[in-house]
Every structure is written in C-alpha cells, then in structure tokens.
Image (cartoon, rainbow, N blue to C red; front, top):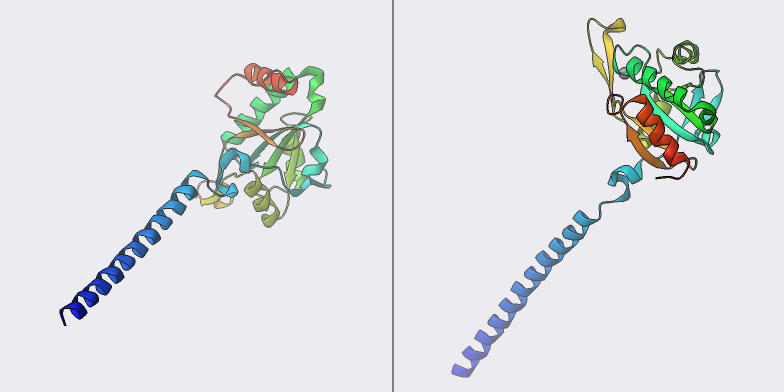
Length: 213
Ligand code: NI
C-alpha cells in the first residue's frame, strides 16, 4: 500500500518536472528566436542597404525610362513636386549649384528629380520646371502607382495634405534628402541642402567618384 502511494507520488513528481521543463524550454526558445530576430531584422527593414534605385517612369521629354537607363552614371535623386513652396525650389537651386561645380565631370552624373505629385506634374510641366534649375536636370513622372513604387524603392516618405491656401487645396509633404547612388545603382549616401555648401557637397561627391573615399 505504502509503496503504491510512493510510486504514484514519484510519477506525479516526474510528470510535473517534465511539464515545467517543457514550459521553460518553450519560453526559452521563444526568447532565443526573438533575440535573434532583434539582432538581425529582415532585409526590408535594414535601412540604407534596403534603399535601391528601381523605377519605371516617364522623363520630361515623354520617354519611358527605368533605373537601367542611368546605370554607369552617379545618380543624384531627389523627390518633390513643382508646386512646392519651399524645400523643392531651394534644394533644386542648390543641386544646380552643385552640378556647376563639377565642370566636365558633370557628364558622369545623372541628376534626377522625381515628382510625388504626378496628377499635376505632367512631362510638360516637369520639362518647364527642371530647365529653370539646370540644363542637366532630368524630371521624372508617371502614374500614381509608378511614383509610389519609385518612392518605395528609395524608402522616400510623401503624403498628400489638405491645405486651404495652397493651389488646388493641397500640398505634398515629402522628405528633403538627395540620394547619391553609385553607377551600379547602389545606395552611397544622402545629402540635404543646408548641411554643407554646394562646393563642399560637390567636392565630397567628386572624391567618391574618383575613389578617394
Ligand atoms: Ni518640396
């Protein structure tokens, strides 16, 4: 009788031990996988490495172009819109000054302005706009979906905002960074007007073009 009770107690104790151990293993496993997940986020959230040049758009001459048309040149890419009251004209004027610093090396660069407001920024509107800033500046537009896909590939934020005093009652909020992409279309760096003079930015880009950085 006594021995039966002892055996049953032992069985219960062993079952309990197995139960607790299983729970600890399960929790430990979950923690372990989450720890690994924290250290190594999926590629699409890895920031700079995830920025790539990938688009199919219409240039300001009405011709369809993709990132492949600009391979072999260092690409300076900026997103904005022609009705922009501040950031775009300031940044594009600055970019024009940067391009002027390059001299003959400007042929190795593709300065690209991509609109985030394609419903108003037709190829003709883009042509008039970019030519006001620099003869080398290339304006790109497309359908809403094509522009969204291009912005997504560069990880660029933009958003339509109601604004009663603005033309047509809206503005496009957008990030103000210029992306420098290598001739292979890989991300190199971002620049912002106001962070350095046009001379400094041109010198920085030229140094990378000539492999000094
Ligand atoms: Ni703007």
